[in-house]
Image 1 (cartoon, rainbow, N blue to C red):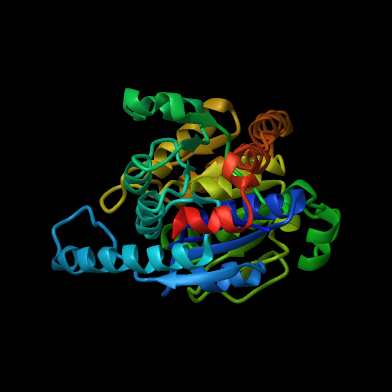
Image 2: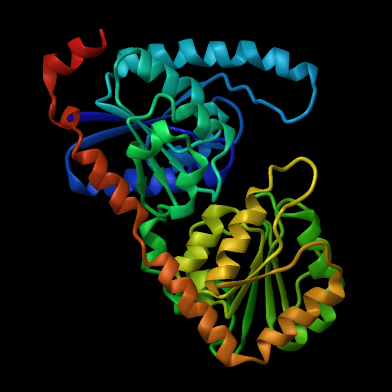
Length: 369
């Protein structure tokens, strides 16, 4: 059995795409897959629920502002490196695949120090700091967008493969009837699905709550609020703190999706062919990746993008699309074209071709001892 290490975490956007690749790999051969992520936060719960072994390591963070925590996190990153190196020496993987997040940097560096091939994937339109660091160790750099290659130096160009974003197979098999059954909403009702990420989004929540009387004239509003206190549910407003396994079917049941523009969520909606209204996270505290992601989908015709708006602008945009079947159909078709790229297959097939994936037994053990 060949062992494969995965690394990444911090948010669902750095975990779920990796799980899509891991699940695809398991269907192709006798592979044992284990995950290295942060020993705090959501990483372990998500990975373990998906059925994969999990190893936690200390995790630091490089902030984009001056903070004494940056100094403390230098020591966490160092501790993470040695913890990851010990795990890799013990588990002896044929390769390591990184899905990003700062927790992935120590495992990538540790793998490189042991001669273990490293692969990394960037979900966003422009690479984040973790991917830039990991690219120094990576044999192959996968990107979701063709234009992303331009952000890397010339020394990286030969190692870049356009893969799209990996999306879990459940989204390719999504059934709107199952989504409506879960929501207990009849086939004759139109659904606006609001997604703010696993933790919700305060800006979107407040816009939706203020605009609810008008939004519910067109749609039953299904709202993933995160842990925030939601309004009481009604026949036309269905709040959920978090929608888990049923999410692919709920997206498929929606006529329109309103949300942030994290790469994972957008590509999941695109895989199901849903038109989107996007309100990217922007301003201080963000590097602008959500705005870049959203503009790509807008340029492709799959989404409408709203920035710095009040509830009136949101109501106007949703109302306009609700009354324009032709535009919604064109947006859905554009989303389908983006989502048709099977990133999980492209990445997994590339990993399988690595010569180390065929090395078994003592030869593999000796390589990392």
